[in-house]
Image (cartoon, rainbow, N blue to C red):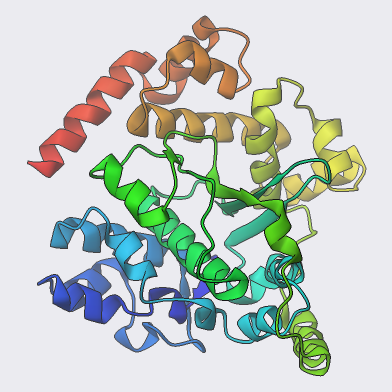
Length: 340
């Protein structure tokens, strides 16, 4: 089970009440103890957090529930990890600490910052690293909203991304997203994150080297190792490599710095195989895109690393018992029925 600290739901009780909702039925639905909400020392199932956020948005009629909740959270939800960030030498060093020790907050999610030396823009990426995650649009918007607040705390209140990327379509008024993030928003993107000026990473912080060293030493003792070749890790690599069309076992093994036979053995011990994971990731990505986007089927086939659209049609019949257009139509009809 992938876990996350109870502070991931900081402000949930108050927000649900302000929107006229009733919290306890939502917690019961998600199998969440009320005492864990907002508590840093409590760990809860990440899937339960995803469930309660989606249910709260539906129950209160607030399409922007995740974004609203983000205004009630900030760096403090990370506990000692937040202290490490605030005492770092620069914004970039703070983000490196967050990236390195994110598993202390939750092994279920990862945050990375890419800043190629020759590029004027850097890229923050947020992703779930568990296999077959449930629909998590509210969780993703909450995460990016909190990330924006963290950047403004570290880099200054004037910070604004150049663009924001969301994997899903707008949940409400598209213009509200631009007003919220202060920049253009790209929907149906390949991942979640935002681009920002790379020179922001060089901005100095109120550095405290002694405190920073002590906190990082503590974090290094309690952090969950992430280098092992778990099925979830392999599945995440597969998802990122599929669109390249060059995915194979040797390539993934090299990424994990293990021999291909070692990787095969580790996956077998977990009751799966590389081929099974590739097929499962393709199925999950196809289901998400057919349900949440208007992506053309030819483009979807390429995203899945399939040679042509006919291969997608055959796979869809095997996965879902129907061709992709029919799957998309059924998902839209179901979604419309739920809203009504």
